[in-house]
Length: 154
Image (cartoon, rainbow, N blue to C red; front, side):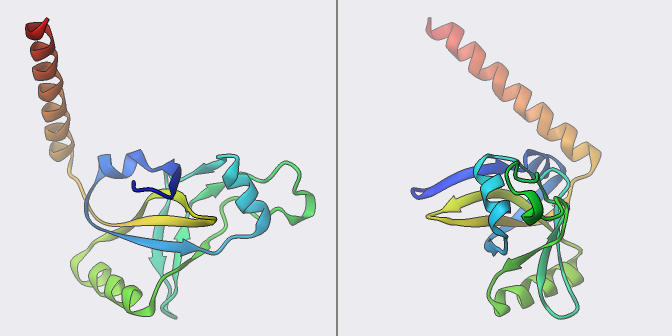
């Protein structure tokens, strides 16, 4: 990530389960206690996904933001759907891609850009089991090559 971005949470499972074709940056509509909880790092993107409503609005589902300890009555439901903020043209483009070609919208990371909370949204296609095994084999082979080169250079 470039300067000015402070990563809060990563969805490591997303890159394991999906091929990421394209990424978009979206703002996210939050309440004060949710932002305070995010600043403490109490957020989980593991089972999160995004969807587009009939009205053409973009929402993220399954993103868990733990209740703020000192928030009392102002705390919101940790799993409530949160509205994502993007330009209408981008949302329409995403809607066409998701409906026609069978892609899914998966949150990849949550970060601060300045004082604002942003969500990196990936246009993803699901991996099959053999794709996951192939990735693991490539990773293991690269690790073995790097280890052999280190041993040789000693």
